[in-house]
Length: 146
Image (cartoon, rainbow, N blue to C red; front, side, top):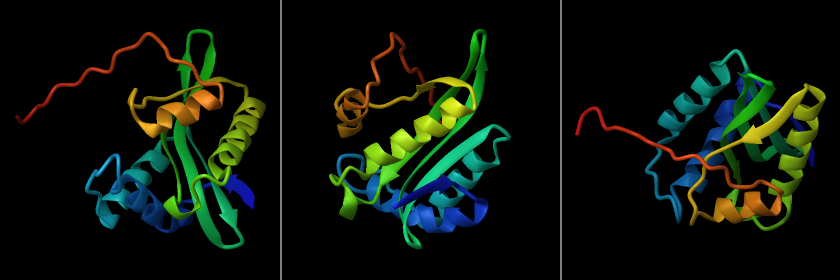
């Protein structure tokens, strides 16, 4: 397995993983491939984008996408999307991907990684096992077209 930065040409290969993972339990999001590609393309268009995918030969197994953001005391990475192919979950691929991501970001001078996940989501336990801790923040939203 090899982890490398995501190139724009990788997105159509990564999007099917995203659709398969997030259309399944517990999320049941309802993504189409076209809309998933659009979302990932938009994330990758950020000038501070950082993304890494883990590959087995020419087959993508998972990816991390986000962006560097400036804060008063330095740069942090806001992780927007992370997933591993459902057929390969439980093999340590996600841990390996996140460790490689942390190593790359550390070399760039990034001081921390921040993300949002649900308290009851399986991702919460995954990130906690990797040393992520809860922060005293609340996510708020407002529907514009109820």
